[in-house]
Length: 288
Length: 288
Image 1 (cartoon, each protein chain N blue to C red):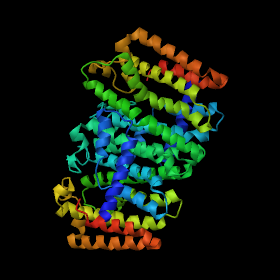
Image 2: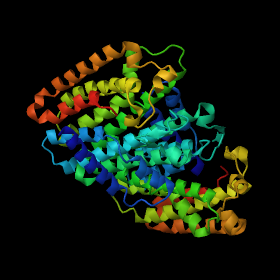
Image 3: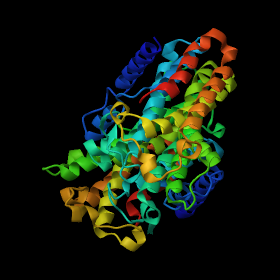
Image 4: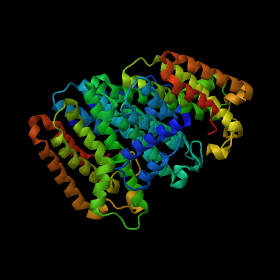
């Protein structure tokens, strides 16, 4: 049932992205943009739609912001997969953009997808100019040099550091690298409704960390075919992860505790938060 | 006199960028962002300030948009200089970001500078939410897959094409690659003032093309020390340019004609367009 909802949301987000990219031509960069925006779980976009619904908004209001966060996420993956970054050949079970085309195309595809994300936030369906402005400024903050990119920079720095990171440092790094976008996604509904985002911020903080711990667990014991990407990368690289620092059992326990915290944080919304409770549970149960 | 004005504008834009990047830390990415935003002629930022002044606006209204276009321009240079793109070691007389740090840092520096550009457009000094929204949506359009990035993609495609580009194709390519940002810069003052941008659009179209022809002339006969970057690159690569297609004399004549057209386009503003006339002339007289 929940998986059906997730799939339905993913389809609507895909359709919104397809429409937005409709005017694009057929250069490798334009083909690469469509390619990079295909597939994926759309968890971030689902959070946008679900928190908008929670505030009684029409889904039409939330589709472009949901598409925007997925375009931004796609940009970060395309650049993260580059040979000079994480050097990944496989993503969502398909060759990465720089493998299918080349590095230059992948740089430009990521660049243009970031731009597309901000363009999507300007769409008139999203509400008045104040709301759209708030979407832009908060996403810029979440994704830039004090958000996601800072986390990526900290991740690169960690690779060459003499001492491996401790638990607090990994938590901080991940709060930036993956947490900031998840947090934006969960708060987007409140921004759209001009409502208090605080319960959603607390929810997202717990879900974001649980998501990353689950990723580290998947990296150790997941099925690479299902995941559609290379696993065991962190262990091979000798990188500190939640699993290497806490052990598998404690990591699992911690992730489950975080899901409980997330569920508590949205109890204020009552029955309407059912979708958010399900996605919190899904985050640590997924196999991709 | 005009050079003093250009220098004074550049200093104010630099100060705005410095303040915006003040909260950043000292990771290589954050250092690289400051580094990439240092120096340069600030022609685009000057156009923003000058067209705002033309509409009677306080300079305070235009400083963040001027800083934004310079941050966006800096991002495009950092990515364009990457080994997988144009592979340039020198920029503004200094080692490029990937030479001073590494490729991964340069990718992230460019990514974060693009984000910073959109963040700067959200600044409350820039006018009401409608104005700021318009700045964001128009800059996204000018810089994305139907503007600057399209031009870069066309440029890459041209390198591997069997037939060299003709004059119409080069003109179209450059209108995207460099023209779109120049056009945005010149129209920014009208957007800020909620005035008709049409005369400025015509001005920018002529100035943008003159700028690129002058660049091609500089590439052939410029002084690499003054230019602060490698020259003769296009000739060495066998790429079609305005000079290779038209010859040096005809290119010079065409650039001068375009400056006349640009000057005509802003005659509607009378004396207040003095700065725009000077910058149009400067574009084809500069030696860097």
